Length: 342
Ligand code: BYC
Image 1 (cartoon, rainbow, N blue to C red):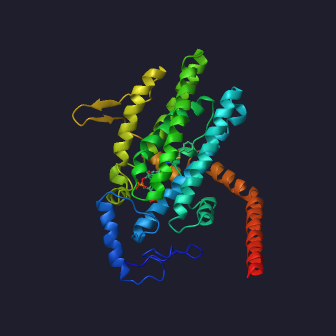
Image 2: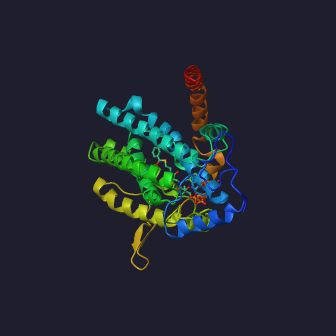
Image 3: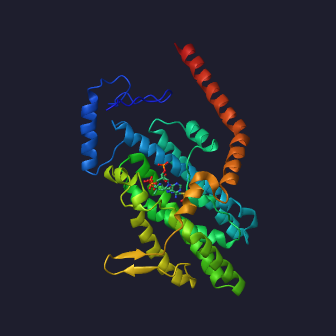
């Protein structure tokens, strides 16, 4: 097993068994320690030795997750200036701001694995990083804010509550706070739809249309079917993922099937049923070709989302430069003070 070497600028803590100058013989002890942590269903922390494949897989998943939160701000930000009341506007602004916060917790969690935020951001703006397929669909009416909250944040909760128990400590802990906030997001979306569904016939039709459009893409958020999910098996063996993509999707359908009755709306799938034998919710076929197209960058809004992210990144260059200049100034001040005191 190759020894993990921290990238430049990210020195491993000196007590880390995988610090660059640790002897290679630590690999066997590190692996044994790692295996014991996983077997006990305990937590791996940044200073612990971990297999490189585990580290890579976590960076893959956590960075994609962070990018999803940041790109996910765009479809809803589209409606901030057009929200139907001051109250709705302030709620939506707070929600979009929360998503930025989620991105920051997650980038920080990924940084503990030795990757830098700059590298992750460069990969995103270069179009080399994944983010959730769902954010490549347009938000065409106000009801889409309801459908996103109810279905997209609802799917996120189903997927992320088990991630609170992910074996990697910083990821699991970030998820706890994220899930609390997603619960609020989900309820505000449900409430938007509830109000529209009990409004005028036009408002009810708008709510139904949004549910119809967001239903299938929100089911696809859980990833490809299990047979077509190359990462699931290993991620589950490492206690990162706790349930398979199809298992979580089925639970989510069950949640929607009950809640949609309260809304007085319907789901655009006549095949939804609870199978008493398997005790699982079943649903009609999803268009996995469409999913692949979106992942390949050819979804309805992929180009627009990336372009917007790129220009926001460029527009923010002066902030990063100012922060770096301030940091350098503080270091110089500290050095001068130390010199004077010596
Ligand atoms: N979209 O082997 P699989 C939010 C990729 S934001 C794009 O099953 P895995 C919110 C997958 O990455 C919350 N790509 O993978 C924000 C893999 O490609 P790579 C978003 C997808 O990792 C703002 C390949 O397909 N949530 O809530 O075992 C406003 C094969 O898949 C997708 C997260 O990010 C997809 N839908 O399982 C409102 C959750 N699905 O990496 C709301 C964290 C799959 O091999 N992530 N792929 O190149 C996860 O839980 C898991 O990574 C997944 C996929 C379940 C998504």
